[in-house]
Length: 406
Image (spheres, rainbow, N blue to C red):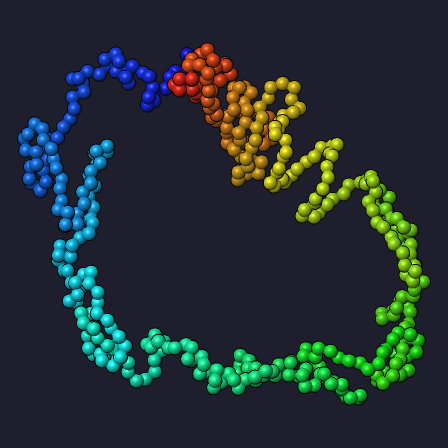
């Protein structure tokens, strides 16, 4: 018969743990003890009934020993080891911890001499080519030398490109030529974008004077040219031409007149009808509705990402008049099939299962979700409602004792 049973944990008020009924006797609790301890064949407690084992180290040998009584732990570590305790206490004649003598650049130490750091020496720099890894270079002095001998010869509007060719900058051309007028009849060939302004002496305006066949314009005087109207390429549209705009019922409305004249102008306003009939498809990646959306029919969401719902509680299975299972399905590798967390109306418990089809109408859990009831008393039998009398559910009483229903 299933019932609530107390779980024994550390601190539980149980007679077997407190030994208040004499469950454990002295004979049963005889302690184990070390008889001897030996290090490298030397007995340290040799046959004595009780003694103290001491660990010690010389404070000047670099070995530290610390003990923790609470965890019965000895810790060995190295500290400052004296040089004299090492097999080799010097390197090339210099004691460990000592400073090496200076090695400076000069002309005293040839490349064939050895340097062990025990005495001060100087090193020679031989003749020949050296890179910056051989000899330190005063970069300030080197920059001044280059500036004085090379860079000062390149001035103002002259520069050198990446291939070493001289390039006259635009400022040189503008300063010497473009600010002056060009004589009439001069042919100007533009081969680059160095010209900032091209001046034409006189105006050329649209009109009826100069046609495309009765003359040329040399800029010596003002002239006008004629404009042909028509439908051919290059022709203009006459100003009295009218354009007619038409809308579609229950789709697009037009305000401000159904036609306008190009020469007189006008405004045509397009709008959406208050009621749009027929099926419509919006194919954009994002459709934004800034106000409320009211759906009077059935809304079908085939693909929803990052769903945000303002309601604090979501009602599922709202069309049911009686008890029925329901929950959520997390799709895995197969479309519409996955892991499920749902309410089992038959078991009156929440449960989980796998490989569950989202269009199913029944639910058989593989496992159940356990719940913890926090009691205001110490007795689960008088406090827990029958709904939670299910195997695996737990009860924590007011005395902090833990119970499980099995």
